[in-house]
Length: 88
Image (cartoon, rainbow, N blue to C red; front, side, top):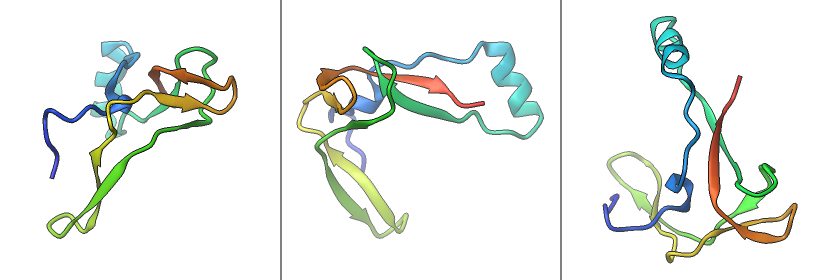
């Protein structure tokens, strides 16, 4: 159900773990977990308007469209870019 031309604000920018740390976590069987935060104030209190569509194959809701609009940060009250930070 995912369309490559749809804009997903949660894929706009991602700060990656150093490659060595990612590889060490993979070898240890740990998944690399991340969280989206506001690119301005680093708050995780962000929202985005979106449409979701039910997938019969995956039995879950999937993102269908975000209307090409940026996310909104409730902490600093601005439209923001999403930055992905690793969770410890």
